[in-house]
Amino acid sequence: MRRFKSISPHDGAVLGVANITSTQEMQEKVAAARAALPGWRALGTDGRVAKMRRFHEVFSIHKEEFAKLATKEMGKPLSESVADLESALGYLGKYLDIAPGVLAPEVTYEGNGEVHTVYREPYGVAAVIVPWNYPASNFVWGACQALIAGNTVVFKSSEEVPMTSQMIERMMREAGMPEHVFTAVYGRGPVGALLSRQEIDLICFTGSTEVGKSLYRTAASKMIKIVMDLGGSAPGIVFEDADLDQATASIFSARFSNAGQMCDALKRLIVHEKVWDPLVERLVGRLGMVQLGDPMLPQFQMGPLVSQKQLEVIERQVDDAVKKGAIVMAGGKRPGLIGPYYEPTLLSQITAEMRVWREETFGPVLPLVRFSTEEEAVALANDTDYGLGAYVYSRDLPRAARVASQLQSGMVSINGADYSRPENPFGGMKKSGIGRAHGRWGFEDVTQAKIVARRK
Ligand code: NAD
Image (cartoon, rainbow, N blue to C red; front, side, top):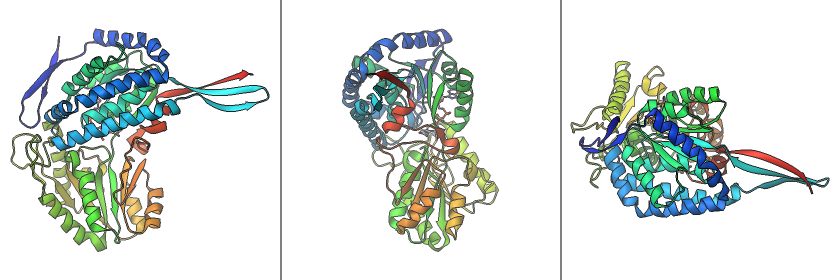
């Protein structure tokens, strides 16, 4: 049996081992998930909601243990892991509240002696493949609407966080979930690819655009549905009339939370030339207050990146920018700690050929560019293959709304308002994804509509 270790990025401690799922085990798990489908479906929405409410209770009981494990496994400060837990539990609670209404049969036509009713039916066995950056939310956002809607789930978490995945499996058992309704598989990318090639009916993928493309091809060859939440390079536009203190706080949190490892983080800042100097001064000051260190200790606001590999990607992106003429205004290097730490970084003199502009930067690096007209700002914001989040800062609300309508992204925040809520659709345009998570949109994407027309 092949195994791999879970290693803490902060100090290299081995947190545990996971068995890499073999082809035979994979086939058995997928077959068992299929066999579990009729029973899970027969419970009806109310029965499944009751089962998942019990899981919600168990998850709540273990939330501190889970948060600590997540921090050790992927390096975010404990306060941020606790926030991830609270948020994930809130999302799951809301899904459970709205499921009976959203999934209820809907009479669409009654007349000429006929009644027409739309039913929302599960696809079947869902392969849910997720990353590592928010171990609680990645699982809840990726798997729970599919489960509540009546799909069974084979779950592939990231190779960076196998211990939190094992804990989710244990909590599912403790909650008394019917056997094989939820199972997990373990390993690196090839295990995800192997899962996607099995007899499955739906793929729910959260991760990079590159992997999303290959899964899209697999889904196409099988003619099955795929829902994808992918990478992003969200623009932030700061107009000359913005409240700069408010904007600074929002930009800092939207870019540097979780050491910048957030899909819809603000990854390119577009600043009106009149407020360039005061905004840069505020941002440099704010970054100077960040202390990097052991994510388990409350005095440190930023931990390591998830892995050495991730650190090297960020370094190469910054090196490329500097070679092409970018100026480092803050950070731009390792802080001299053991582990994959990187200082929060601001870059100016950015050009469109630089990797920090063209690619997603999944770390604490923010490139800044200047603009003078609204049209220019919108063009710069849309100058990306991605289309996940976007941020606009202006006291002129009609202008902010006008700009929001022109941005090619699935989600827009104006003046720091948080669009992430379980009632709202979450997802991207362009190469940031296909489909939406949460609310009625999320349930619609993991179910198929069936119309039944009958005579009265
Ligand atoms: P990744 O795409 O490398 O991996 C994601 C998952 O896919 C992991 O479990 C991995 O093992 C698996 N995988 C890798 N290769 C595979 C293959 N060929 N077939 C099937 N599965 C495969 O992404 P990552 O580095 O783990 O996470 C960071 C990325 O995720 C960033 O691009 C980020 O923007 C994105 N992300 C998006 C959202 C969103 O909601 N839009 C949320 C979180 C992260």
